[in-house]
Image (tube, rainbow, N blue to C red; front, side):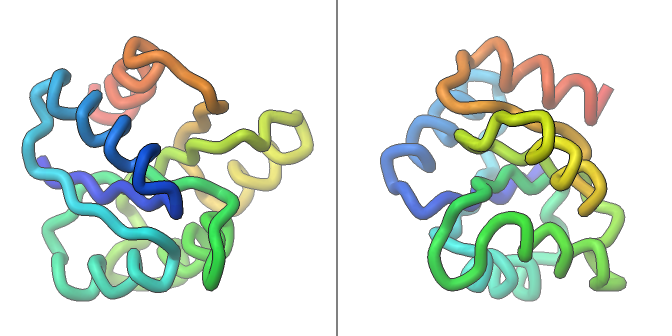
Length: 121
């Protein structure tokens, strides 16, 4: 299973990537913003899950989610939003845009595992 991790913080990408490896997800790609994520998606049609931050420069996570949902190749891929934006309003906005699940930073590896299990069963 191939996972794309999108976050402008290299530290957060590394934390998520290391957590995924501990959960036996070895095939992990990275992008530092939505524009780089789109490039990764265009080059890797076999990406299965996208984990994205909300607040990023150039193209934020919400814009990325909307692009993915409008794109015929990737519109069905599960997306998890990982962000500090934990208010009820923000969660509703993200879900309406097409996010499958939502994690508020800071989070534990167990939370990421639970959210992934909800998506992949």
